[in-house]
Image (cartoon, rainbow, N blue to C red; front, side, top):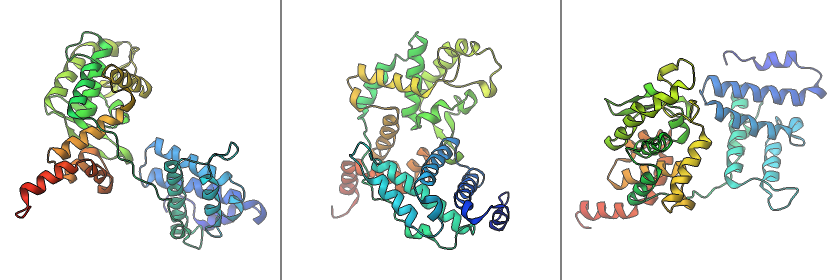
Length: 330
């Protein structure tokens, strides 16, 4: 693979066999992370998660010695991380365990393809089964209550108007909170009514934005945002961050989280809401309104249709209505 040392090069530069095992594993992990960054274009946050998972695997007892000889090191490691309930051995939650197993299997797939190991160990590793929990969603009335609690559409308070604009955009475009907070002014076109989003894996998509959200966003941009932007005392690139905190810097995830939870508490929805709830509600309401599943997949930025299909479990009543209307013998 271009830019990475070959297996032969690694053997020539390695030390004695008794000292090489841990070094070989560390180099293989470094090569894999480089592959994910350069060839797959994974986001920095995703790469950090992969690195943490694989470093934990490499640090486990016996892994450096046994990792290349077969699946035993990985199986032993995952089994140890499965145990839960004892103070000295709490194990991992099912979702974390599955993510870590996926990282290890991907690493082994790379190592085999790159000639670092002679056996296809990845093919002998099964991902732990995980029940797919249905995401929490809101009704359209509950969304309305949440948005009104965030702030009025013509609110004169800068923070409340910003919070309303942010939540309107999360629901109107189904954005992840990280995607919304990463937006610059140039990413939003008020005239064309769309937002340009860079999602997971650096995949770009254009998402329409409805009139109501555009109206609030326009008031935020034309009103207090400029004053906050001036507090940064720097020439902003690409128009500067779309959403700003009180000190003129890009709004932080924790600040956005607090804003959503505060609005949820005021709307009587405190235990059910996170920023991602608006994304789930966006997808569910589109499907209930008759949107095509492939279109919803594109709008959400899902790489796989199977991820989007999770929302079809939430729309059973809509499916029955369509069936009753469309099937000749319903």
